[in-house]
Every structure is written in structure tokens, then in C-alpha cells.
Image (cartoon, rainbow, N blue to C red; front, top):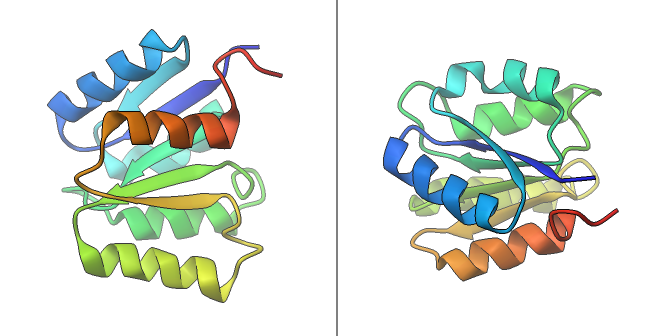
Length: 132
């Protein structure tokens, strides 16, 4: 079964780049440019992985992450968060450290990151596009 990934970022050019990268590896990719709709969309789609920018124009990526973890329907969905903001990365790392069970399947990438690094992280989290 093909792995489904939802990418949430407010920059269209980055969404396009990440979609192309992940689709070239045969993942099924959907994108969302508004953070306010993210939790609802994740609940309805139930992707195998969410890739989430922490700095969105219309919502806090940290708030989205905490909402996902607070709901049983989305609590187990793996999330890769990324940001250039050191304080936000530290906040997520603190969440992971303070509650490793709740945030066990959350990982942080500091921007700028190499696309190969992102792809490696995706494969570590969900496996290859068609793995069981």
C-alpha cells in the first residue's frame, strides 16, 4: 500500500518542491497551504506522515502539533516538523523530552536542511513508499 504524506507549509514554492521530491519516490502526497485547516484535514485524511512547518502565517505549528497529540484519532500519526526558528525547535524538543511517550513519533529538522536528509527521515519514519 502506498504511503500517504500531507505537507503543511504556507509557502507555495516549498510545497511544490516537497511534493515533487516525495512523488518522485512514489509517495502519495497532498499539500495544505493554510495551517488553520490542518488538524481537520489530518483527521479526515489520516495520512501515514505529516510534514509540518512550525512557522505558518495563519497558525502556530506547535499548536497544530499539540492538537494532533491531544486527539485519539491523530495522536499516533508521525510528524516531522521543520523550522528555521531556534526557539520553536527548542520548544518542540522540550515537548519530546518532557513527554516522550506522547511525542515519540515526532522529529525535528532545523532549516536549512538538505532534501536528502528530509527524504532519509521520511524513510526512517514510514519506510519506502510501498512498504508494508
